[in-house]
Length: 241
Image 1 (tube, rainbow, N blue to C red):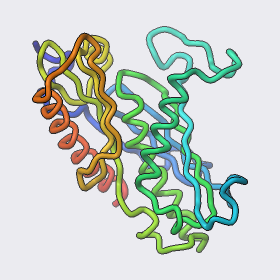
Image 2 (image 1 turned 90 degrees about the vertical axis):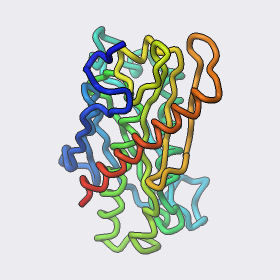
Image 3 (image 1 turned 90 degrees about the horizontal axis):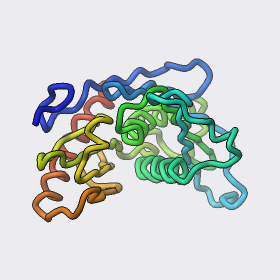
């Protein structure tokens, strides 16, 4: 069964990371995974939340949202609904956890960085694109702090590893990398994998959407994801060069 865009099973969609896309934040990146586009901005605040004061540790967190017409039909803004949905909370927490795996909070010092990830256009893999782009935005925000000598440690110690994320899944019995929306909704198994630049796992989220899956299928999906994250880490390095 051919993929909708003609890619091979182990091919990423075209990936673009555009730094400095927004003028005001301390870091900003427009990340594109094929037709999925997410604007990631990093905002720096001196000080940390009350529960963290006096610890000597910084804080990194994230918020995720989707524009009303990011998909093929309009969705109401969650601010109008008066509550943030469970899916939005889950993705925001995933992005925050993933980004904290890349940073030494002691070396950051008592500074806070908030990553806002806003989906401009969705075609599958919005959370994985957000993590991949937010890492680059976070890196630039740390560079902004370093230029003002506001870090507690050396800049290279603060960002001590990279993180990237990609989706994988099984469609018509075939393991595939970086699912577009058409594949995502048809997947028998759907998984999101967050990896460091060294290939270690930060988080693995996997579900048998249409039944169960075998150990060899899991291994095949993880192998695909690790290879995909390695390519994304290289794209991040090139963007930051």
